[in-house]
Image 1 (cartoon, rainbow over the protein chains, first blue to last red):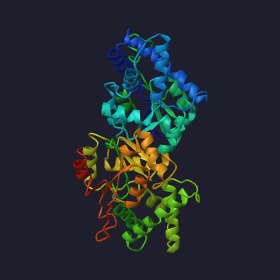
Image 2 (cartoon, chains in turn orange, blue):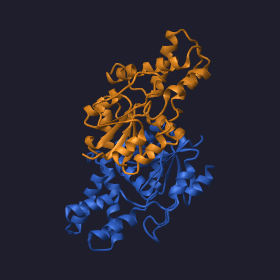
Image 3 (cartoon, rainbow over the protein chains, first blue to last red):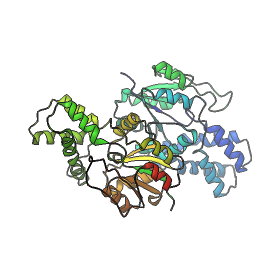
Image 4 (cartoon, one colour):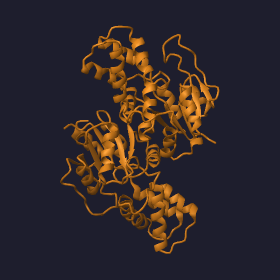
Length: 227
Length: 227
């Protein structure tokens, strides 16, 4: 079946959250390695989304969930920080730089196919990120529209429904095997894009042998798909 | 309150549905004045959306509703037409040309504010229209995401919620006083844009004295808002 539309994971796949969040920790005055702080904050992301999906926690957008996990992290470490600075840290997730291939890669991929986000971030956050990075999508799709976070199947199936394509005509592009697994479970095609710097230099290599495509960046994906 | 985001009605406000649909009637071989056919088809649009909002008809996207109203129109006139040609007519609503000011006007307005669609058309149709007309939106919003058609208040309030702005920080831009009235009822700001050719040369003039702004086109709106 031909790929008619591409949906992209965003944090880590399109934008470098670690550098942007570390910069924000540096500016906040919180002591400690800003990269370690960014990683520790991010490590609380999957578990809190899973709590929402399990019904153990009411729906919250990412600003609310980021604030909850930040408060937990700082409390655990006994760090005092004013509300205004916590707010600025949560806001850092709205202003993250894209990896260098993303802007031209989306341009190339959008020539022949619909390109959309499919992120656990809420729509308003994704709009801010796209404006910040000057990224053009045909459509901003989010787990918010399904009220279910990836890797729940409804998140992927809602995207296919809204784009009016079959699940098998939709390809998820992501750097994370767990996300790609979820997409495959819902019947989507998948493309693994390697982002070796997501967790900084020297972090563990990733791969996804089950992906339909495995590429180094979006420009290579455009070549592979004949975009 | 400052206008932080703009949402745009689409059919008639941004794109010239009448010329495109008339062209498609001409190509279909249905006899009669193609403009009159386009107008007669469009006249069935408001009533069928109202039926859905009233719960008298299950939710359907615009392809489904356009097909139902086309079938009714042709049956009423005793016109025979193959399914494939009916399908092509329904598809014409996905490939309508924008008014000449729309592309540069959106570009100017998006410099300082978020710009999004807010149409009764479903997301997939709006993606097709934006790609056809090379129109760039920060986000494609639709009554589909509220499962309520304009002028129901939920359609406008869902847009404000997804863009994470207060209703009073959101401005609807539309050529239709009924749409603008609905938006005002939900607490939005409103801008009336005059589209004297929507129903062809010589059609009745429209105005909306209650609108916060009344403009001849999107470039004038950009000037007025200090975009």
